[in-house]
Length: 527
Image (cartoon, rainbow, N blue to C red; front, top):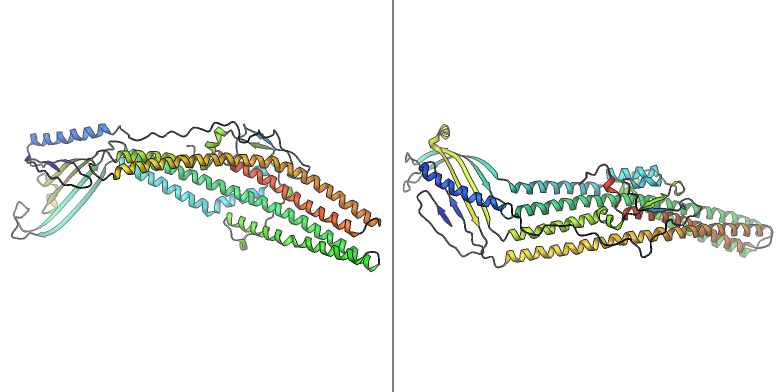
């Protein structure tokens, strides 16, 4: 350490340590000559000017967002202009439009005030949203705190003390008193110029982490709204299956009553009655699993909306009352990466990793520090405000790592490896997003065709049951054909309800795969 003092006597100290600190301290007191004080101040000013000139340098890589994938579509074959249609609720044809943007409240396209109310309740009460919002606030405050490193720090202190000096030592006071009271007040200013941009890179990394947390909040929002809407639609589909099953049970019970009456009149065989009893029991067995699934789905919705099952009223949603959106957005692949919050979060993490490489590079370069202290010290409080008791100090330091056993080099390599990891994770997220959209498009196409076939099968089963009953009343057939037709009708009714639910679920999945329209929400600030 080299000290340049007022009496110009050099004092050199060298130590073999893992990092050798080389520093220059420039000091002066009020008692020196004006000329000498000026020379000291000019040296300090020169060192500070050199450091300030270096602050325009920012080492490390500059981040550039990855290029969008070169793709013209999501599937091997372009999706049809319109899906298949069926003459049942939820069976309308749907068309895709690349020019149609995703609404910030896309679930309103189903035309259900109950679903809209459920989503609003979930957004207001679900703790996952509150958790993500708090995490974003914490990230923002961390960024503000990190930005403070670019500015000097100022501290003020006041120290009153009563001291007794031993007789073997000279008194520190001009009066040579060994017992005295001392009042000292100081203002200290410290500044470390960001010579090579390490602080700026740190701020850049923290800002990117805030962006990642912001997109994590949007991902939470998207997941919550999608789960609520999908859960409500699944509940409606289960209610449709339960209704069809109960109708089949009621029909079976009526048929069993007729057969028993015919048996008593000698017009029906005992085997026919037993066969109907067996078929009715099998139909009844399908009801409890559906009721169980409905109860579990209701409990899941209660949890998503921040309620307790025992305290939540039963507010059913009728599948037939829903509307299937006729026009569906289909964003271009180049736009998808800007819409998916998981992709944006992965990009922000990649940005943060890039900035950390710059931080690691800057850590291997010299750093500068400047300190200034001004104050006064006196044996009585009033004497602190006289010029003869004032004090001040200026100092400047330069630190350059010389030997650290390769720690800083390996930290830089670790930062570079972390960047490669973040880049691979970004690529994986993009690939998953494209797969999600492709899977959803396939589902929309094939499930629309499945619903059309399910509607045709239901109509055929109903005609077959009507013919069997008519033949039974005319004595042309026994109970077995009627039982067979009845079972086919039950299976067709339940299958139709399942196919209707799949159409709605596919629509929800598409909105979710495209990012959910968070950029069109009024409560999201443009960035």
